[in-house]
Length: 268
Image (cartoon, rainbow, N blue to C red):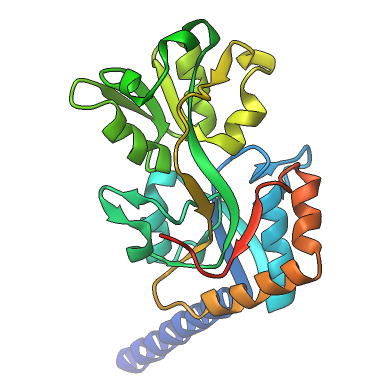
């Protein structure tokens, strides 16, 4: 009798596990989980706690076209590849620079990228009082930089400061401005889209972009797991949103229309 009861319990547990896996699979099939961090005008929360910004609105419109519910998962940027490979997120959709590298490995070898959709570049941010000391990239050697950990800014700063310099890693790009303001870092290497909206305003009115140091152009794209069938689906949706004007409408909403640039072929 005990043996029969044990078999029944084992069968019940197996059924529950199968149901749980089936439920999870169904959720994954119907939901697009986007890995994000807080970036002004790109991904941030409004007064109601809802994710808004260009990338957030963009993702929601793509979700409508491909028939998937869109969810946003806030992540630590330096853990983005682990989050993606583990299945915790389906894509990295957060001002993700495609033509960059991490620890010497081109990002195109780590993820499958969607079409490019927005131009960007890294820039150098310093205190206004120190601006005259920065005339070229040579002036960055030996300095202390602050960057978002795992960002394109880190890839640049690691080489720019040289062996005699130092790179401080912050959890988010917005935190880098505080480090420069406090004097903990000499300069920040961040996305120019963010810097243009922060420098010279509010608490950061004493910071500015070093226009004398102009870095190479970058392109934002969405990163998917290698071999994911979502890449093709999202690319078709991007073309639709470009052609019907919805993508431009979203860009204008956040003052990013001059940066919008859909590129079906990315120059890595």
